[in-house]
Image (cartoon, rainbow, N blue to C red; front, side):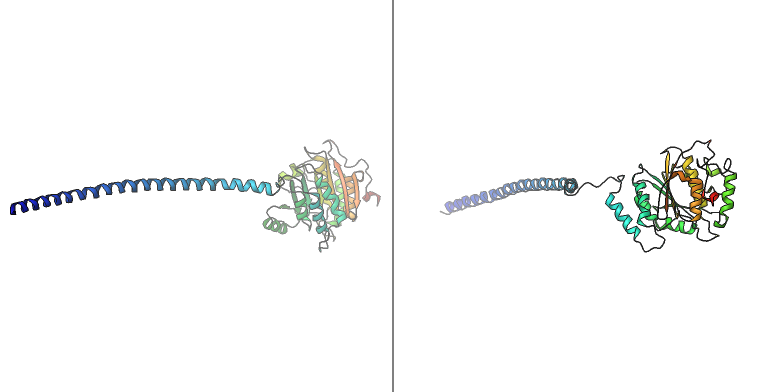
Length: 321
């Protein structure tokens, strides 16, 4: 019996042993399946994340295009930078310039002809202005597509304007004339009309007392379409007056190379003696288009270099007075 029991016990022990040996195998097989499942999930997650990142980058890069397209539809296309100012804008600028509190300002009647000449000028328009005045920024704005150059007697003010407003191109001139010398200067110019004070010449090399010859070289090479004379000052005997600026404008218009054959010249304070006498002498009465308030409007044509007379009619206000 003992043997039987012992053999039975042995059999039970053997069976138990077999069960113990089988159990770890099952655990290892389950662990292996879990590892494969974990690897598969990791791969799937990584692929999902990469797809998500790529999709976001693609959508973000396309957003500005779609936004720009939407903006182009929602808002009208802006005007090209070289397009002229709308007439309503010009009229508004003239209105506010004419009601300025500055006592030296031009009236609307005086501003309008200059504005019209700039508006009808072929682009790019070349505008030369003698004098830094209350209308300086108006002229620059109206001629937004062209070149506007300012000439002033005060070098400190010209430097200040250029420093504070870099878009303004301004140069200073040291005038050597005086209002009280206007008769002598006029007589000297008449005597030298076939030499230093001839109507067609390069003023850079001129010795005429009325000629301005100390501007930057490139100023003499520009074919000016419009010249506005609103400086220098001339309200007292020792003031420089506008004799030189009027003479210089007349020579620049007749000597221009290229561009239009005609130059619009506006003289402010035209009713004053100096402005009237020298305008009729060097811009000529037959070229006077209009005169409104204190503004004279002349249109001067290019001349042959062998010409030695400013006007067809030599009678001037100075000789008749």
